[in-house]
Image (cartoon, rainbow, N blue to C red; front, side, top):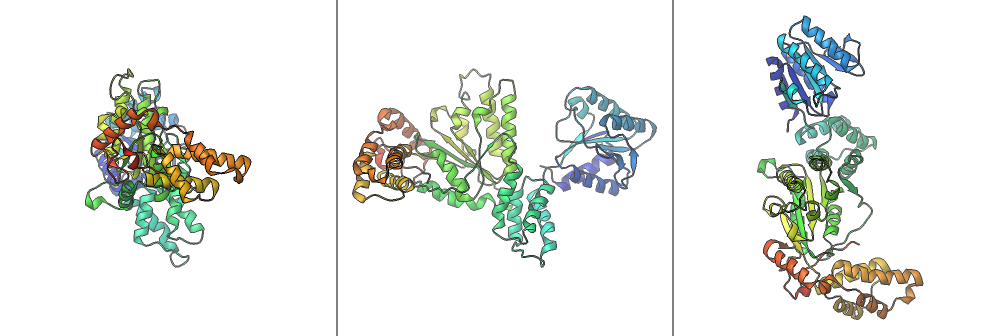
Length: 517
């Protein structure tokens, strides 16, 4: 990552050395032009900047030197100037069609050769890669979005003039937390977000939560990941005591400044276990409890028919997640999206490359993206995914115990019927639901709620509950071997999400899951 100071120093060295071609990679044109202006003033050289709206102008005085606003016209002017004068520097800010071997790229190549012969410099500001033969004639420098320290300074400069004029509750710690939240935004985007808070006539501590929603709105139309709306909903998770304790410890670290300690923010969890036991709902519950936006990455939509297309789509999706951080990224049934990485897929190695790309991002990226990945078919998980250092923890989610089934039954009945049932019926339903997953219990209660809606609450009787639960045939009865195979895997490789030992072959009194309320 290149911050403003590093970009400034690198650009200064390149201009002093008269590197004939400089590509400046950034999405912040105005910010890089400010840096270029400062560097040009420091080294005392004239610099001319071309934009499509204003043509070619002197970067210091704004004086027009060429009225042609087209890139082609600018390039012709630059070539003529290089042929006539020494030590000129030109910056073109809106250039397209030079990432491959095109006519424009070839013309740039010829112009750069002229610059090399006459001590000139031609720089381009771009967000795309440069044709290889052109880039090899020069050097590149990158200006990334503001770092957290830079963002904190931007926030401080935006808020400070209003202290004493409007209520401002933010202290230095709040500004640093706001900087962590707004990381990934450009300077002008961050200034716009802060301006909307100031426009309300105050800057309160509770506004820190609004920063996440404001950032989410900025990236709402970016493709690659899907926004999952959880606002206005209430989530209640029964059981999973071990997972809850772990999450409580990790939450403060997600937005803390950990650089002095040399550790990264929490990276995420992999939830494996019995199908239908609510692993996916846990992602929603985590995002809701932590007050973070939730995004879903569907790996099945990543795969393309052309060579390299799948890898490009995954790269874009993960880059989007980095931009919208801090957030929770939910990857449901990850083993399906990465199918083939364990061998024998016949996909030309695409799945293996996707696994490598995903794992590199998971281990090396420093953005505040908390990944919640779920898996049902553990046999299809690539071994590399389970290695320490990828996910922070691997949890196993089993069928609910008796106590947990009682809790789940009560939650779903309260949600659907807006009342509770007597203890004796609850105990009977707990017994009837032995071997049920959370989804099985939800299905049984839903049938009763449907009948109450269609025929009135008076139709709800103990027999209706008994019959509804008796009609459900859970996976633990139809495929007990599958359940036991999953549990055998979990005993050896995972931490129990309930905080209890992973279930034995008779584990109807063991682990448990989460429920949506």
